[in-house]
Image 1 (cartoon, rainbow, N blue to C red):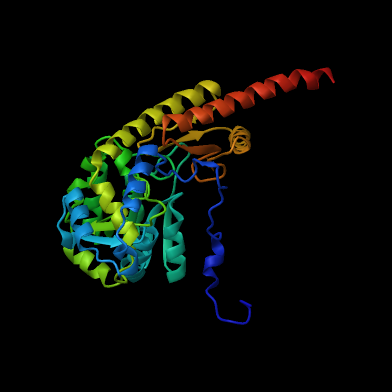
Image 2: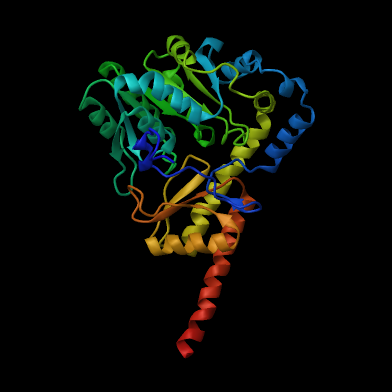
Length: 371
């Protein structure tokens, strides 16, 4: 069929997106906030949902005010979007395409690549060195190598969990302003970083910076598809003209409002994520010293490991009904895996499954030797 009609073949360079986990599987690949308390909060919101949220077109004003208050902005500096994939698409249409170039570390969230391919824009990627992360200096040098562009950075990084210091974000912001470039900071995982807000708060209102904020991870709203772009009023005003009014659904707005009214639930959830992160880092390294945990400020831990070890761990966990993210073959990783840490119970399931897998291997080896 596609041979008979005009198509954009540039997207052939990326895989077709699809969710691969099975119903009932513990999904520790997607880094969702799988907290029972958070789930109960959302269940209460849905039970009390007014039918008008479904049968009427949504009005975002009140929820936008709550989001603005949460992040210390005025409403004019907030744009709500149906998830950050849509926000990234808007930014690429409104700012990246006119600039003609996106500077970004790789590996990175593939929504950036997909949007740029659709628009025919250069992705000027700085590859993560072995052991990572990509340094701010490398991003600045790549930005300065050509004309003004859009520079995107994840804080913390979405593959390693590395969090840049406040002075590093400030240096990148200053360099972007001097260069005439736009800085976009993706703070999808920032809620899990201790004092993380302090690293990006100086960007608020800067005329050359935008913040993309997902609520999928931080508020457990992955299925609701809601996010926000925060920034200078003139940037948000321009970006809003590319948006379609009413894109965020009424139920999604109600769930976001409910989450914003119950910060104590998320404070407790983030504390458990931090404890689970620590338990996984020490526990997996103790089970297999060839697995080296990278420092993480996100709700996951990335491990460097031999390729065969990472493949074995991924396979054993899959057999136990646990899905994780293999990092084998990605830039900066000779081998490895990323495992989400939504709760202590989830991490104990991972460590228990791996301990059982090791015991099974140890038990099988003598039998093979005797044969």
